[in-house]
Length: 198
Image 1 (spheres, one colour):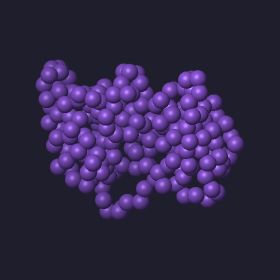
Image 2: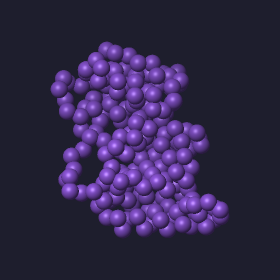
Image 3: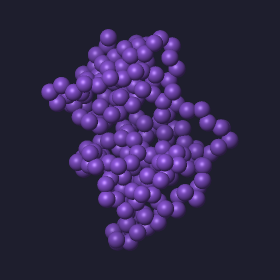
């Protein structure tokens, strides 16, 4: 079994090391050591997306994420999807918890209004990604949390940056979406027909 020690590495390095090892060595079993919750979630989700059965153990503050799969299993993960090629895919990346610059109170009201209104995009709205200060919209007591939960319930895939949550010490307060990494975000950008940055 291949073992990768990704402790002390910032996102997305643990996932990228895992991805490279699987691709370069055509691995069917792997163990990845990480030292933070965001990396644990990201590595586990990535392995599952590649057809691995995943188990996790915590030992002395580190996480041991082990994945195994039968040879030739086709990945069925988050970013590998078969969609109608006629359907346009729009990704919205939200990097702040208020819209625009100048007056934060007004910016907060505008952001609430914007997030309530994006449902008008219909099925073309494909991904909603929160990074930097934007992750504060996906946590407990956020004014838009009920809206985001409804979107998620209706099938909108919401990604929330794990590095950003960790930076603001909010990882345990996230209430909606998947904790994600930069690899997932970049992959989503590549797959999207259009990316809107807010």
